[in-house]
Structures are given as structure tokens and as C-alpha cells.
Length: 339
Image 1 (tube, rainbow, N blue to C red):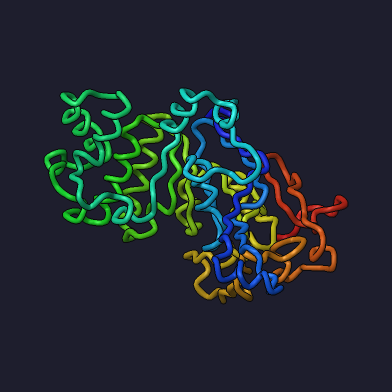
Image 2: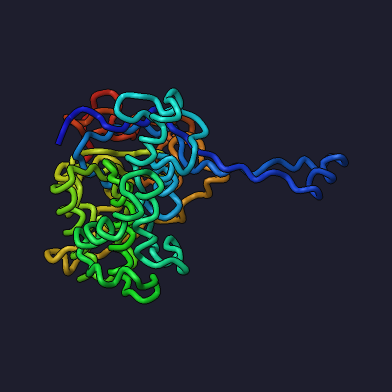
């Protein structure tokens, strides 16, 4: 792994606004006071990922991790902040540089059935983009596709089939093959094994690690499954309601989480040695990103919350080398919380 960041996010935010419809605008003429609904999906995220690194991005559903992945992949444009690829801000790139960066960062989606065109054969799903981008010729497309399918563990003789003719694990491999077909350097994997049986999950995870070694790939691996993240990641980033609350090398995070939210998540991971453990899920629901809490977003659910937490956003503070957490309990040299 190279310590030099290949991708950097600086204060990246993403908001989705729902404009007022005609009826709401008309009502405002009579003083209704209707305003646009704004979803604060990602809120001022700073993140650097080194070449060859596998970063696991974890959080509850609705925390913004998939949206952040789409910003990284260039599918969504950041509402604020900047993204840099190989030391160049994407908003300063020429059209040619931006095109190269778009090919270099590919995304693999959670549900292959919804992301694969059901009317296209696998040969076209995998082989169309390489032809369009000049990575192979139309005459060489068949051999190119065969090579990619072999690499992901699929029989090339199946390339004339449609997505519905494959199992879930095979469709996951087709999604990986499609991403690999344009020779990317960085893969954003959004819950890429979540819908698979456990035994198939293990096979696909092993494939990801094999491809990493063979092709020198970098991963942002988005998942709600801490067991999967622990197996795969060099570093883990914990998100809560659009914000990064903790980031650390995987071994350090699982040994001693420092943010109350990270502690709660890890405390409820089943283990063989904790058969008699009473699992206690977090109290309350994750707040709406339409109206996130003031101060620390986690304070309504935090057992350690004090008055300061309700009004002041905690900054990410260094706990140890490469380990940061955003919690007021770490202020004033108090030291790390007990895990």
C-alpha cells in the first residue's frame, strides 16, 4: 500500500433539495411559509485514501455512506467541498483529465438485477464500454470479454445469456466484470455482497482481495456488516447522519472504538465467545437528515451526552496514530474512553 493519497475529500457535503410545487408556491402568496425540503445527506466529510488501500465505510441505513460513495465515483456532484484525484482537484481538470478520472473510479452497486440492463446480453454489458472508450476494438471485443469473465470466475461460454439467467452470486461477478472492463484503479463497492448468501459472500470477498493483488486496486468498501468490513479492510471509517465520527486502522478500531456510536455498533457484533452476551441495540431511531440535530448529531441517542453536545459540533481529534474520533469526551487531554 502506498501512503500517498490517491483520492482526497475536503469538506465534502451533499444536499438534495425538493423544490416547492405549484400548490405550495401559491399558498405562499397567502403567507403559508412553505420552504424547500433539504436532505443533508453528507455533511463536511474529510477523507484521504492511499493507493492500494481498502477502506471500509460503515454506518446505519440513512447515514449517507452510499451518497458519499456516489460523490467519490462522480455520479453525484458535491454541493460543497472538493474532491481531488491523484493530487488534482476534479473541478480544475480539463475535459480529458476528467474523462480519465471517470474511467479510473468505478462503482459496483448493491443489487445487480437493478443495475444490469435486463435486455442486454453479458457480452454487451461487459464489452460495450471498453469499445466506446477505445480500450478494445469491435473485432477484439469477444476475446476482451472472455478475458474479463475468466478473471472474475465466470465461464465465457455464458456471455450470450441475459442477467436473469444467472444466480445472485454470478450476477455480482458480472457487476464486477463490468467495472473492471474499463481498467479502473479505484472501486467503490456499495453493499456489493449484502444480498448474497454467506457462503457466496465469502467467495466474492475472496475475489475482491484476489483482484486487489493482481490489479493493484484501491477500494472504498461500503457496508453495514462489520464482520465483512473487518475481514476486508485496512482502515475503517464510521459515519453517522452524514458525518464521519471515527476513523482508524481496522485492528485498532475493533480493539478499542473511541466514539460512543462506534462502541455501540461493535458491542452488538455477534462473536463465538459472547454466546451469553445480552445485545442492547441503540435506543431511538436515527434522526431525519431533513432536520438533523444541532451540535453533535448523535447526542439524542448518546448515553454520555451533556449540554455542550447539544450546541457544539465536535471536531475529529487524534486519539493515536491514524486514529481519530469526533467526541467532546476527548477534549482537554482527558484521554481515550474505555472501550
